[in-house]
Image (cartoon, rainbow, N blue to C red; front, side, top):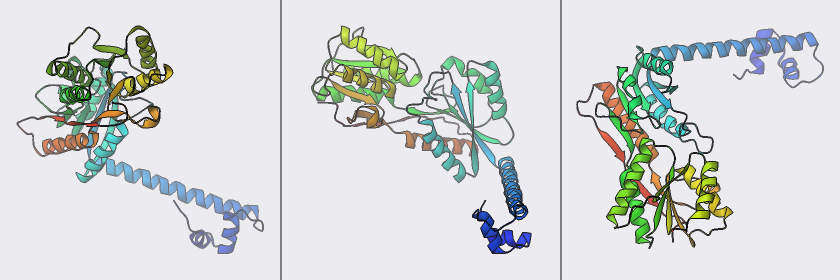
Length: 342
């Protein structure tokens, strides 16, 4: 809070010149007067903060809440220090919530801890909760049943967990199938899919798309066509170095997510393998070029913004009255040419 010198002078019966000397730490003012001015500032700003907190509390009590439940299985996709996309989603959720006259409340919970699940379900069913977004990136289908106890309008985000709720996620099958088509059109025949060692829904969809792409183009699906490398970029880099020591270079790698892209490209640089001269690379989801060695990666763009908007659109309709027909929304993906495919 900004306090004017004139207001301080008027309320303390001092001259503006005296107050100015105190605020600018100039000599010519007694220590008693100096302390009097600073005590007043502390009192006024403290009261202002208390009023602000009380106002925020009242607004929270008076407004409907949209709960965003992040279900965390400690798989690093929701909390990753290298490239955290969750804040971008929350920005869209908050903008749309304000338009709807609501506020966003975020909760993290571990689906492996019964007390965590019971707590978030209980909180989601509180009277002032208008709707729920279940951020289910890391969830497995067998972890979902307890969340059926949520009695508020709910949309499943980043997963497909049945036919009772709207589900909004990426079109991974079609997207990766298009990646295979693209690489084949550029002369690649021996294409390997470098995978994360986790088995979440998004990755299952992408791997299914890779297999479909191979079938469509008459390419063989071999035992090591889909090759798991690790979870973190350091694990991926180390596993890729070992792969390069024991395997011939294929025509191209499709890299399952940004951890795979970053780790694989680090390993290729260490081995002094030239991209795209020696091998073509296509990564899923765009990442900053400073994380890929200043080369522009050819990527499959995942449309995060539109997906977030549609999530809120479905939730808004549910909050107005349950829709008898539920929708599964798979956003389309687009290949963005870079410098890593011949």
